[in-house]
Every structure is written in C-alpha cells, then in structure tokens.
View 1 (cartoon, rainbow, N blue to C red):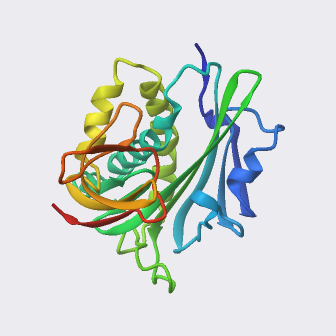
View 2 (cartoon, rainbow, N blue to C red):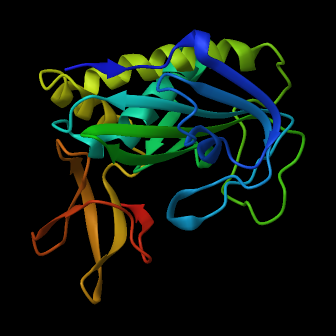
Amino acid sequence: MSIVLLDYRKKIFIDIIDSTNTYLKNPAFEPGSWIVANSQTEGKGRNNRKWTDIGDEKIIFSGKIQFNTLDLPFTLLPIFVAKAIVMATVKSRPEFETVLKVKWPNDIYLYDRKVSGILVESEIIENKFIAIIGIGINIFGSYLPGGLESAGYLLEHSDPVLKNVLLENLVLSINEHILLMANKNTIQTEISWLYDRLYQKDKLIAFDAGTSIMQGKVIGLTEQGFLLVETKSGSRYELMDTTPNFKVLKDE
C-alpha cells in the first residue's frame, strides 16, 4: 500500500480565489499538492453550505492526498483531520491543550465557539482514492460578522507569526494522522483520544431516525468514526453524519 502525502515542495499560494477545494480538483495539480489563500469568494462547507472567511488572521487551506488502495476506513478522514488540527494548534500554542474540542463530525471548538471547519471531498479514479481536504482556521479578528453567532477566534490579540508556524505544523500533522488512519493497529487508540476530546461527549442530542426525531446520550465513537448514541430506553444508534434536526440539547 502506498499513500501520496502532502509535499511541502508542492505548496501553492494565491491571494484571492473562489474555492481552494475546487482549485485543487484540477487534474493538473498532482497528489501531494496543497494550497493556501488569503481569501475565498466561494468558500465551500458541508452539505452545500458556504464557508465564510472571517477575521484578520486566518488559514484557508486545501490539500490533495492519494491512496493507492480502496481498502481503508475513509469514513475516519474528517475526524482524523480534526485531531491533526488540534495537535498542530497545541504544538504551536501549548495553552490550548485542554480547551480545544472536536465537534463531530468536522469542526473544532474553543469552549463554545467554532474556530475551525473541515470539508473532505473525494473521488475514485482507476482504483485510487483521491481526497481533497479543505480546512479553515480563524486565528484572530477584531470583530465577528452578524449571522455567525457560533463562530470565534483562537486568539484575543493579534499574533502575525502564528499563522506560518501553525501552517507548517498542520501539514506535518495531517500527514502523520493519515498514516495513523491507515494503520489498523492504531485506530482504536486514536478513537479513544477523539472521544475524550469530543465536544458532544456525554451530551444529550436530538437526531433523525427514519421519520422520527429522537433524543439520546452520546456514549462513544465507532471504529468507523460514527457517533454512538443511546436513548433512555436503551436503544443504540450509530450516526454516520449529522441530519437536519441534529443538535446538542444539554449535558446529560
């Protein structure tokens, strides 16, 4: 098995772009390529949502990774990338070690504020799995735009140096966590770490089950990265993704 990881020599910088993910989908850019932009005009979020750039200091990033096998647990990609972001941030600023949380399936929260989002897009070409990993990180901003009540910043004060330090650590951390995901002997350890850092850990959530809206307590993550939820009656559900009525209600 071989994986084409991010290559620091294949960095692309563009000042303003429509979407870093869309840009990297061009076959002209080889696996291992990654791009950083100062601003996006058509940033992409999950489920056809738009990612809005905010702040004075931020990271807008996409990387292309190629897996020369289809026999890997690719459903783990978003949460392993989330852990990569947390570890890169903590390496850059150790004071964040206990306060950054992974909000399943694809966000990073600082306390109750979203400071980072992930969008993984993929395609299979000639039995090769191509992943485009998009990441936005809000480092610092002097204000929050209206309509983004849950958003926040890593820092309360400007630190122009952090962006480049964090970016370098991020590329290394993504590569490291891709290899961890590909090693079946390390997956359970990583899943345990992720659940300990899960924003929804032990919380009561609402979710869709067929035509019903259910409530249950988050009790774990499966080895596929699905959210494990238990209702008061003892029924268990494995959620592959969020649903229209998915939300955190309270701590159990």
